[in-house]
Image (cartoon, rainbow, N blue to C red; front, side, top):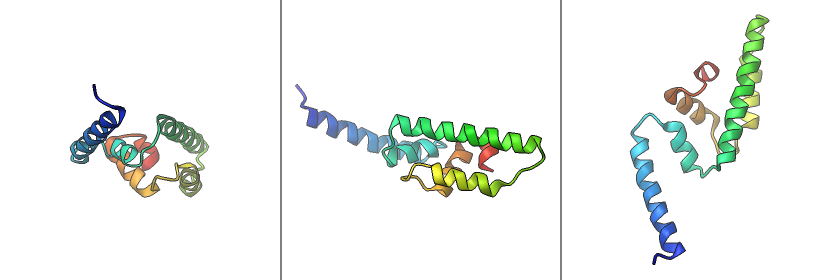
Length: 103
């Protein structure tokens, strides 16, 4: 029977292999999540942040009042500290995650 340590080592090895696979694909955001060892809640918080900022930008567009620097500032401030905003934006654009917000 496999010990917990052996299982963990195997899972970590498989994770490294999967990272190599997705590093050559269009799933850059997922790769960043895995590399930075984010939890599921961290990713859920990221999507909530993006949804909130997207709504704010849509409201501003409707009022013909759009300034992107405050939205970007808020994005940077509320982004998980392990994540680099510029890297995340590029990954989201490539993976088509909130593209209208990331432009």
